[in-house]
Image 1: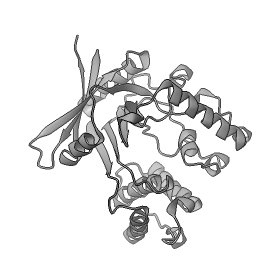
Image 2: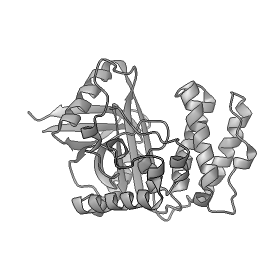
Image 3: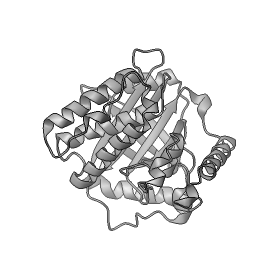
Image 4: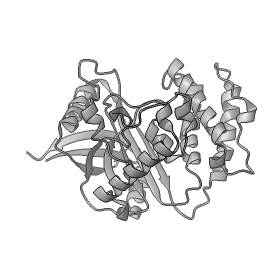
Length: 302
């Protein structure tokens, strides 16, 4: 059995901890492993760890206030991006109800990044925070325990490899897992149809601004929400797909797309599952004490 290990490091850089995942034995997982191994010599690791604890002082109001501060910061930089002050969030209205503003802010991030590239300048870095805040706010008030981890190898695109996802690959995707599943990172600028479903966003579909993931990427994402009782099951997955199909039909989205095409399949590619049992507290403590992602490693017990 092959395993993927995410190696975490403390702030001082003198201690590490890890989380292991047992990888599924499928052709697309083997291609993903090949991509990781191929890109490692010419890439560097980037990671993101978001931690939420229930019953804390964090609230959607504080995040909305931060969004308005970031907008001011972007406008002060004068690097080819000015955000209309009318897009600042109304702090007297729940942020997730300000859908048009959130969509426009996300579009500004998306278009600027497509024009300038990732980490191009301070404005793009600030717009990355806009992107994260949009996703945090559009889900509504989230006062729950959660850890979300992204780890990816960033470097030259491995054009020598076959990175295109086939229809068969797309059909292997399953609804976004809420506990312990290792998924391939989205790594695409913009929102796909599945993200629109989770946030009840039909405007993006109607405007033709969907961005479906079409290639493999050397990155992973893991979600831990509330506790291990949220492990995905076949029954939960099937029910969520039914809800997705019903949402598409009820909102007449087939006037704009064919939601049954494989590329629009709900979810992410699941690569593996966590190798040992953790409590929510253990996961939170691990990433709080070791907040930096140092490496992604592949190993085999054969």
